[in-house]
Length: 123
Ligand code: HEC
Image 1 (cartoon, rainbow, N blue to C red):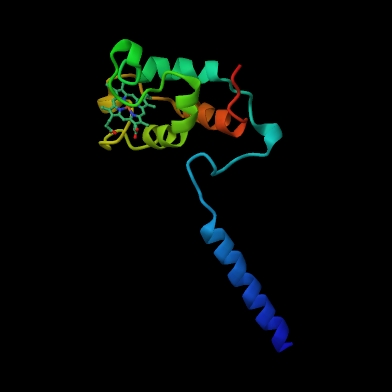
Image 2: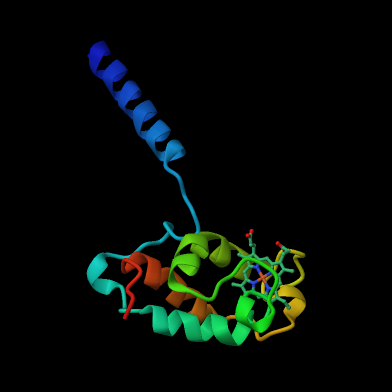
């Protein structure tokens, strides 16, 4: 009986540790089952970014900060992108910077997450 209790305590501790050590990024939280993730392609994503993140993140348009104008760059920076657009609008890190462009809607932020969860489809 006492060994059972010990085993149970150890198991609970292990479960707690596993939970505590699992990285939780903006992209990995609340991920639905694969069949429930709507199909989102880079074209969907890039039109949102084009509207709200240019010209600053578009070197072709004289943008001077981290480029977000191509598939590879957007994929690489997506976690940070999601983190920035989800900040409160009065946070200095909020993007679009100083609300100089239209903020992303909740649905558009969801599209960014779905794009990642769906495996970053190109087209
Ligand atoms: C008016 C110009 C402007 C617009 C529009 C803008 N940004 Fe920025 N962005 C900046 C500046 C300036 C910085 C650097 C300062 C900082 O990190 O806050 C920056 C930094 C960032 C960073 C951090 C980059 C890094 O390498 O760490 C991310 C991510 C980002 N922006 C995402 C976005 C997204 C997504 C949008 C569109 C929804 C957007 N920004 C719109 C000016 C802009």
